[in-house]
View (spheres, rainbow, N blue to C red):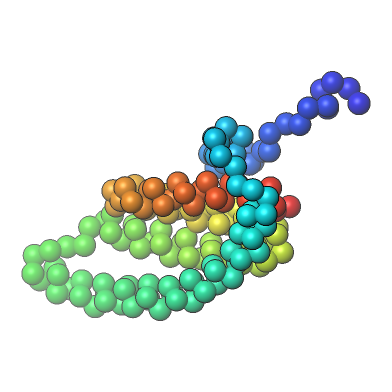
Length: 159
């Protein structure tokens, strides 16, 4: 084996902006992270995460649909009262629904430890970051950072 092949190259998240962002997170949340999750903790997370995702989605879907229904129902009254629901608000709902769809798409891959399932969750988290930036939610961004840290710590468990 020659010297070029003797060292391991960092995992590549793909090309384009999403791949560059993934490589950035790989660098700072895995390779340069001051603390790494123990392997047994990663194993538990990978085994339990799909089931927790399913439970949370089952609980979230009726709440999201109800919230959208209330929004649509009361939007005309808000306009009559002189208030309007801003564009950012509607973009937030579109992002939320897109994130939910990605999480639904991730279930099969997560259960089979496939990288595509992991990647769907990653994209859903990126949408969450975008949503929290738009809504100026510092708490949400902190939660996103913790979620991304855990997600990237367990990435090696997917193929």
